[in-house]
Image (tube, rainbow, N blue to C red; front, side, top):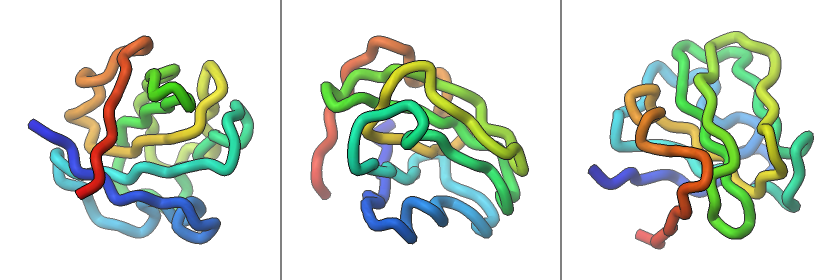
Amino acid sequence: APLVAAYCDSFISRFLGLMFTRSIPSDSGLLIAENKESILGASIHMMFMNYNIAAIWINSQMEVVDVQLAKRWHLSYVPKAPASFILETHLDRIYDFIIGDILQFESA
């Protein structure tokens, strides 16, 4: 099934992410766009999260560079390689993404 993700590129939307939400539908997510491709800049935190998520890091060539189970209240997750985007989605979607996959984004 297609995944529909809200695009987050402002400081506050990137910082808040999915914090304080109760759940996320399995066909939804957030696509967090970073200002530049990096490892440290693409790290995420799970503070104030009520549930675990699938975190998918994507570089500027739209290639998946890391996939991790991000557990609620965990201080930090850092990608294995530099990333420009982080897709945060329902945990059920974690096996839909494999390192090396090339993704395509479409505007809705």
